[in-house]
Length: 148
Image (cartoon, rainbow, N blue to C red; front, side, top):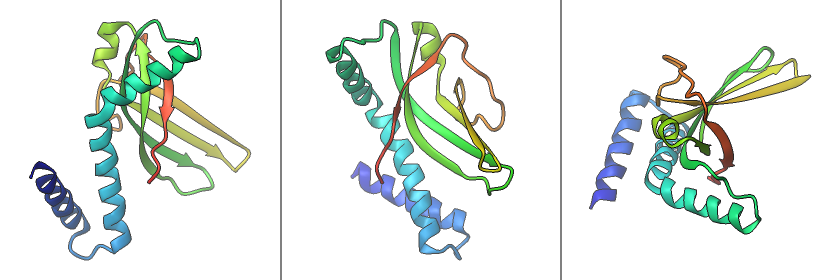
């Protein structure tokens, strides 16, 4: 019942955002973004435990507190159009600092196809485009790619 409501809310949001004239591909993109964000928030602790177990089994365990949060990516291309994507990342650091992290802002820049830079910044907001506030002392320890 709860998942049915969530699906209805996501579909309604997609239709509202699309203004009633959205193409099917646009609606699917919106659903994917909401779905990935929901999955990261819901299954973050299990993903985090899996990563920690994997690292422990390879003898490279993280000795700090860890947490899985969404990655919010914004691409800035001087010769290419920008894009925005969502994914997930594990962050690590002191407990108090890790608890403040809400997302990882990924800033991508491309200069004429010659080089690309990707800066991963743990932030204390799910809206880093409004105010980019780094959480000091926290680093990104893993990137989680979700196949869609």
